[in-house]
Structures are given as C-alpha cells and as structure tokens.
Length: 243
Image (cartoon, rainbow, N blue to C red; front, side):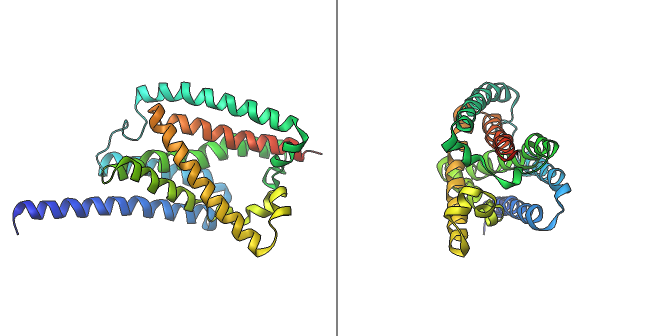
C-alpha cells in the first residue's frame, strides 16, 4: 500500500469519526436533557452542548464561523431576515388568539403556571435551552459537517431527519399536554400517531429552516424565527389558560 493510500484511508477514518462523534453527542444530549438531568440544568446543559458542537466544527473539522452561518456579516443579514419573520409570526399569532376557533389551538398545559413561569419559559428556557442548541446543531454544525462529505441537499435531508428523530422523546406526551390533541388522539394508538406526526412535521420544518438558513446566508434567521414561534406560543397559551 502506498503512502498516498494510507493518508487517504486516515482522512476517511477521521471524517467518519467526526460525523459519528457529532451525531453521538447530539443523541446523548437529547437523552440527558429529556430523561436524566433535572429541569433546572436544562438551559445550562443545552447551551453548553451548543458551544461544544461549534468548537468541534471549528477545531476538529476545521470549519469556519461562516460555514456554520455565524460570520459577522451573516449575523447582520440574519437580524434583518429573522426580525421580519418574527414580526410576521407575532401578527399571525395575534390574529389566531383573537379568533375563537383558532384560539383553542394555543391551549397547552405546559404554560399553565404563574406569569413568572411563563416569562422564564418564553424568554430563557426556549431561547437558550431549546432554540440555541437545536439551531446550532441542526441548521449550523450538522449540515456543515455533512456537506463536507456529501451534497448540500443530502446534508439538509440528513440533518432534518435527525431533527425529526430528536423530537421522539419530547413528543412522548404531546397528545396529553395539548387539549385539542388529547380529545382527538387518545389512548396508546393516539399517542403513536401524535409522536409520528410530531417527528414527520418537525423533520419538514427542519428542511424549511435549513432552506432559510442558506437562503439568508445566516444561522440567525432560523434562530429568531424559531424563538418567535415557540416563545410567543407559550405567551399565547398562558393567556388562553388564564382564569
């Protein structure tokens, strides 16, 4: 075997190990945050994992901040794109809350707490515990790492599929926490349908968010859109559940 062949095999092994390591870290993080760690560690753990993923991308896989959508000029673009989309979400939610038929869709038992609980969930837990890790992982690091080994379309498909599977554990009780789903999807079969629907729908959302990330050339775009959809939904649910 020639020296060139040996170096080529080592490069392939390094590439495979990097991909496997990043995916394994994401899987481990999902299990830890949903089944092992106490709730008060959720934000710290997920934010820490997001930082580790970026470090792996930069130091191990030799990517740049621009590769993961976090370059300085990209942040300015993302602020414009994401800010506009977040404003659109706010308008749609306001209309949805004002219409009695759609108002019930906001009824989520996870927001059935005090005003301070809702503020914490909407503006701390969601942005820094949920959105930061999910966007860094599935729209930043994973697509960039995959794209160095396959086409961009395949990279987006793989990262979006993983994003859908990421919601397996969080979606375990989704038909119980949402009143509308609880009425239409009850029992074990309803839970399976709800989980499958959550995985497929989030995978589709993952594709759309990846498209936004590359269309706007900034990871900040899906980050701001993701925060607005989740955080404002919590706020809306709190007002719907309020006596």
